[in-house]
Amino acid sequence: MWKTVEARESGSGLLKALLPGSSRGTIDELIVLGLIAVFLSALAVMSVVRRRSGGRRSNGTTASKSYSTSKRFRPTSYTNAKSKSLADPAYQQSIVRQAEFRKRPLLNREEYRVFEAVERVCHDLNRGFRVMAQVSLGEVIRAEAKEPTLERDAHASINSKRLDIAVIDREGYLAAAIEYQGTGHHLQNAFMRDAVKREALRKAGLNMIEVLPSDDADHIRWMLLRQIAPEQTAESA
Image 1 (cartoon, rainbow, N blue to C red):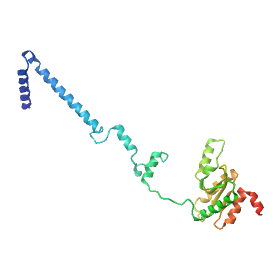
Image 2 (tube, helix red, strand yellow; image 1 turned 60 degrees about the horizontal axis):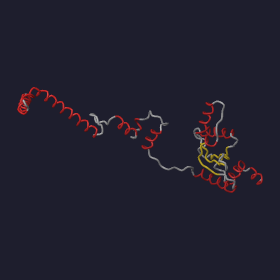
Image 3 (cartoon, one colour; image 1 turned 90 degrees about the horizontal axis):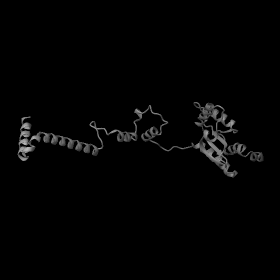
Image 4 (cartoon, one colour; image 1 turned 135 degrees about the horizontal axis):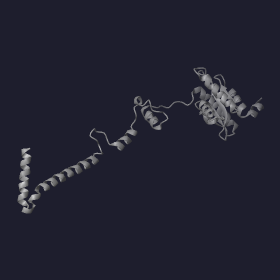
C-alpha cells in the first residue's frame, strides 16, 4: 500500500514538474480520468476475448443457442429417454443410431413356394395381375363407418395385419388375398388375427384363400383361379 502511495506521489510530482503552473490544480482530476480510461480498456479487451472463445461461461458450458443446437443432434441414451414418445422422428433417429440392423427374409421357404405358384398362375393368365408379399391390410382395403371414431378404430384393427401374399389387378385393386397356414398357425393369437382379416376381407367382397402345407401347386392354382378367373375353373371342370 505504501508503495502505491509513493508511486502516486512520485507520479504527481513528475506531472507537476511537466505541467505549467496554471494546470497543476487539475492533477488529481487527470489521475482519475486516466484510471477510468484504463478500466474501460480492460473491459473492452475482456469482451473481445469472450467473443473469440465462443461465448463460454465460467462453468465451461457454451452459451444458450449454440449449446442447445448441438445438444439437439446428440444421440440420446436409451436408458435415459424411455419417457419420450416413439411418435417423435428425432427420438426414433436416436434409437436407430444406437441399434444394429441385419437383413431378414421377407418369406420363409414354404411361403416362397406358394408365392412362386401364385406368380406362375398370374403369368399364365396374362391379364395384368401382379403379386406382392407381406402387404398391410389397411393399404388394400378401407374401413368405412358413419361414426369417425368407429372408422378410425376399424382401420387401426386391420392396419397392423399383413397378408402373406396379395394379388392386385391392373388398376391396383386387391384381387386375391392368400394366407399360408403353416405349423405356427394355431400358436398364441394367430388364429384370432386371421379371423379379423377373414371378416374384413369378406366385407370387402373377397374370400381369404388359405393354403395348407399339404396343398400342391395344382391345388393352389385351382383356388386362385376360382377367385380371379372363375371361367377358367369352369372350363377345366
